[in-house]
Image (cartoon, rainbow, N blue to C red; front, side, top):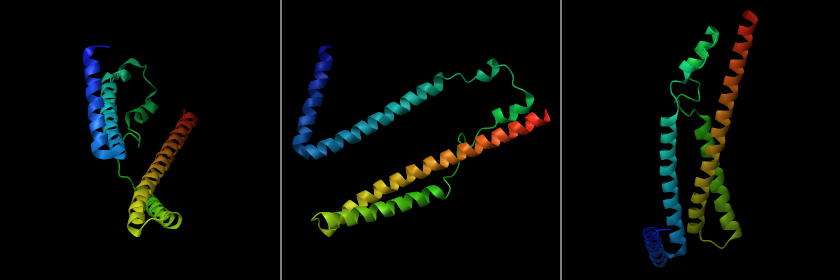
Length: 166
């Protein structure tokens, strides 16, 4: 390792120690999580952009031509490739998840700990955010799975119908 690397390491450790002294250990850890999340987001975007630019966009010209009856299926984008509205399932599921999470968190904090009403309310809000996120992720997964299966079944049926005709 070079001297410059050790210098940066010393600077990072110095800033970390100062942050621990100023913010406390929990504040430092929260700051580190936020900074690491931002860094992971930026790195993911850079990697995705690089991968998108590296893909071969002229792949259709090199593959042997498919039968004419399959050409419209290849050229038309699938539902998952298009941008579309979320629909009603996802916001409703996120709302139900947030409500269940908030109620469960508040009741648990009031029942099992010696927290004040303000502390239980704040903890309930935190639980509501987590419950809403879980509801959103679950509904998104179900929606994508449902759409993928519906498109696969439709493609299979149209392929079987073409097979009977041809």
